[in-house]
Amino acid sequence: MDLEKAQNRIIDFIRNETGKAGVSGVVAGISGGIDSALTATLAVKALGKDRVLGIHMPESSLTPAVDSEDARTLADWLGIEYRTIDIAGIISAFMAAVPDSGSADRLTRGNLKARTRMSLLYFHANQMNRMVIGTGNKTEILLGYYTKYGDGGVDLEPIGGLYKTEVWELSRRLGIPESLIAKKPSAGLWAGQTDEADLGISYVKVDEVLRMIEDGEEPETILNKTGVSAGQLKSVIRRIERNEHKRKAPPVPDLY
Image (cartoon, rainbow, N blue to C red; front, side, top):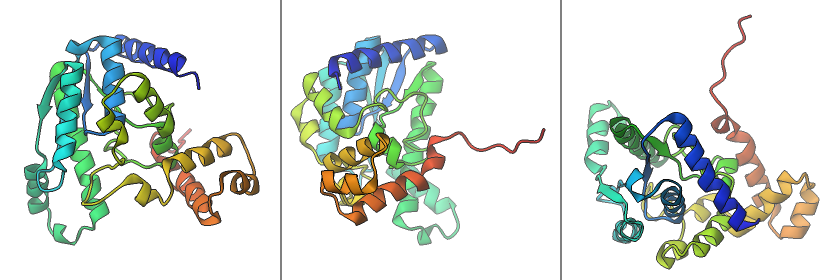
C-alpha cells in the first residue's frame, strides 16, 4: 500500500464526513493502544486539535497503569482535550441492578464494558454536536473481532481500510510514540487478554491470510504460501462467516 496516499485519503475522508454531517468535531475513545492512537492522530491532522476530544475509559480494577499512561502521553503529544472516566462503578451498578448477573461469563461482561464505553462516547458527542470516530482496523472488521454496538458502534471508521500491520507501518511513519506501537494489542476486556491469543494466530499471519482470501486464492494455496495450519485457516474463515452480521445493517423483512 502507498501509505502516504492512504494517509491523505483518510484525512480527506474525516474532513468530508464531518463536514457533510455538520458537526463541530469528533470524540474518540483513547485506550492506550495503537489503533486509537492512529485514529486520533489522523483526526487531528484532518480537523485540528481543538476539534478532537479523547476520552480514556479504564476499569480501575483491571486496566493496566501503562495503558492510562500511554493514553495520557498520546493526548499530550497531540495537544487534544482529554478526559478520563473510570467505568468500574458503572459496570458494578449495572450488574447490581440485573438479576442473576453473577452467572454472566467473561465474554458477556466484556461486551458490556465495550457497550458502556460506546454509550459514554455518544453522551459526549451528543452534548458537543460531534461524531463518534471509530478505531477499528480492516483485520478486526473482516474477522468480526469487536463488540457489536460496542467498539463497533461508531459514526465513521477512518482506519477500517488498513490491515493491522499497515496500522503499525503508518503509525511509525507519523511518529506516534513507540511505546504504543510496540505494545501487545489487547481489548482489555479481562485480565491477561491479548488479541493474538484470542485469535490463535499472529496479526502478521492473519493479514497474509486475509489478503489472499480477498484475492480469491484457494485454501491449499493459502496454506502453502503462508505456513499457517489448517486449523488456523479454518478458524479465520469461520470467523469471517460467523460474524458477517456485524458488518451489515440489521435485516428487515420485505413486506411488499
